[in-house]
Amino acid sequence: MTQLLANVGKGFSALKADSPGTQVVFERTVIAAVIVAALYLGRELFVPLAVSVLLAFSLSPVVRFMTRKLRLPRSLAVTATGLMTFAGLFAIGAVITNQVS
Image 1 (cartoon, rainbow, N blue to C red):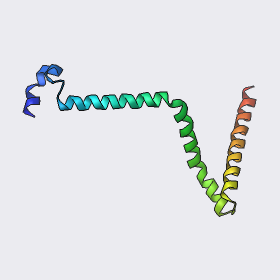
Image 2 (tube, rainbow, N blue to C red):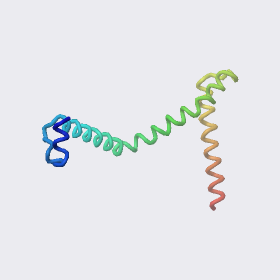
Image 3 (tube, rainbow, N blue to C red):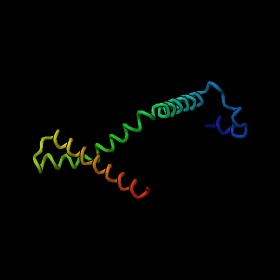
Image 4 (cartoon, rainbow, N blue to C red):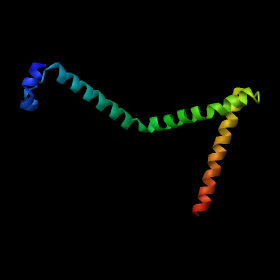
């Protein structure tokens, strides 16, 4: 602590390049850069994956309702929910397209 206080006015030149603190900062910077690069390069995979996970979580209650209350098999409930979702999205797209044209 006293060494840090003694070097306050000297700036970064007082830090040794091989000090443990500098090494930790460098390692964390490299790790952050690798993570950012991986996310940037993998965006074509991660964006559809994120959308599919979001849809799965949001449509899960509908599937659960169909399996418990309507006593449909799970595969039929998932198929019906998917078809209803895509039909709804298609209808919204058709209305928007009709309004714009």
